[in-house]
Each structure stands twice: as structure tokens, then as C-alpha cells.
Length: 336
Image 1 (cartoon, rainbow, N blue to C red):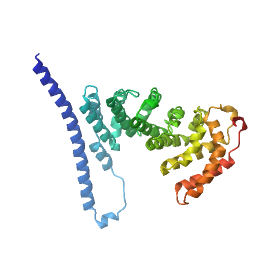
Image 2 (image 1 turned 120 degrees about the horizontal axis):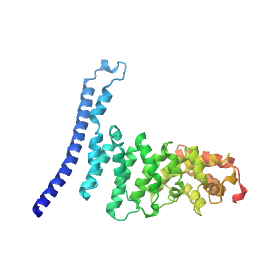
Image 3 (image 1 turned 135 degrees about the horizontal axis):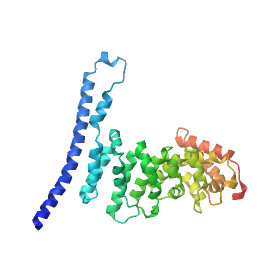
Image 4 (image 1 turned 90 degrees about the vertical axis):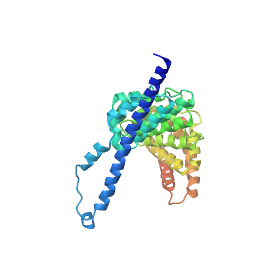
């Protein structure tokens, strides 16, 4: 076959790939337009008499869902094209998949193990180069959207350990943000939180990061974990770096109100969990020991922080609560 023929076939293949994406995307957009028109007609048709009628459940919601959702076959078709796609097509497909995942009715269509494993295989955390890093961000953002589905979450949570095979310090800001968003969702759900808790010490290192976005998300993950008693124990047993007590103390000097609120809530949860525990269970390098070392300084910081807050602020109530918990927390002299 001549060179021109090979080029022609290549162009046809590329065009077919792009055309497939466009067709599925247009199909989805057409469905959304139809739904919008139906909703507008329903609003116009509703009369004052009808508006006072008792509400009732119908099967129309299920029909709308089947009409509106993208099928698993369509998702699989798009995912199957990723491995052979060039850079432009790859990101066009990924952005289309992410847009589909923004609609909850489409999320179950991602639950095929073939789809999930194929998407996961695109990840190269720790890889260098703008392309690989951007791929990681897109895949992680997609996973963040779809792990709300239990079947998808159960399949992906076993891969959480592999996210930490690469040193997190080698990832750029966008990768860390995308990863922590995903971990935050896993940590928020009791059936997957324990898989994240095992890596809490690695996440803890980022609460003092220069990037406010990363600090905020690191605290989000830790706060979500602190809401699960089993995860709190795992975190307390984990080793933290030297100076971690100083990081905790400095967290109350945080200027970002959202980050301050998250850190206060986290500290309330973990210090409250210390009271029934015995120090012999924990090492000097543990978060448990770190919290006890920081206790008196944190009491001072909370006392100084209260006058700077107004009673209407959420942080004010959390600061008062933390101060009370710290007052009630027993001292363990072995770590002093």
C-alpha cells in the first residue's frame, strides 16, 4: 500500500474518532435541550388550581432518566479510543467524559470494570512532562465525580494504595489538588475511608504547604477521616515528622477562614478521641504523642484566637469547643 493510501487511512481513522466523540456529545446535548424544553412546558402548563393539588410520585422520573443518560456502551466506546488517540483527541474525549460525569444520571454508566481499569491505566503519578501530568489531573477529576456510586467506589478503593506509590512531593500543584479532591470523597464515605486513613501521615505533611488550595484540601481529607472513629485510631497510631506539633500550633494562625474552620474541627475531633485511650499503645513518633506535646501551646493559641473572632463566626464556636476539650484532655507525662 502506498504512502498516500496509508496517510488517507490515517486521516479517515482520525476523522472517525473525532466524529464518534461529536456524535455522542451532540446526542447528550440534544437530550439536555429536550429536558429543558419539557421543563419549560411543564411550568407553563401548571395552573393555580393544579399547583394546590397533592403531590405524588410517578414513573416519569425513571423514563426521563433512561432518556437522559449516556449508555455504558457509549462510555466504553469513548474510553476504548483513549489509548490510540493523539494529544488533542485524548483531552477532547476526557473532557467529554468529565462533562458526562457531571450529570448524576450518567454515573452508573461508568461502572464497568473495563471502563474503570482502562481509565486507571492512563494514570502515571510521578511521571514527568506536561502531557502526563495533565492526563493525571483529568483522570483523577473524573474519578472524583464518579466515586459517589457505590459499585465504582468499591472497585476503585482497592487502588488507593497505588496512588501513594509515587512520592507526593514529585507531583505538581494541579495533580495534588486533583488527588486530594478524590481522596476527600473517599474519606467522606465510611466504606472507603479506612483505605485513605492508612496514608494520613503523608497527607498530614501538606497542611503546612504554601499553596492555600492544597492546605484546604489536605485539611478536608483529614477532617473527613476524623469523623470516623476507626480512622481516628489509625491516624493517632501513624508516625508524623519532627516538628509536626509546631505545624498544628501554627494552624490556628491561619488567615484563610475556611482552612481555619477545618483545622479547628479536626482538632476537636481528634483531641476528643484521646480521652479514653492509654498512652502505652502509642510511640513517641505517633500523632497521638504529637497532639499531647502541642496541647498546652494550642490552649494558649485558642485563648488568643477567641478575642479576634466575632460570636457570629463559625470558627468562634469551634474555638470555644476546642478550648473546652483541651481543658478536659488528660496529660500523659511520658511524652513530655
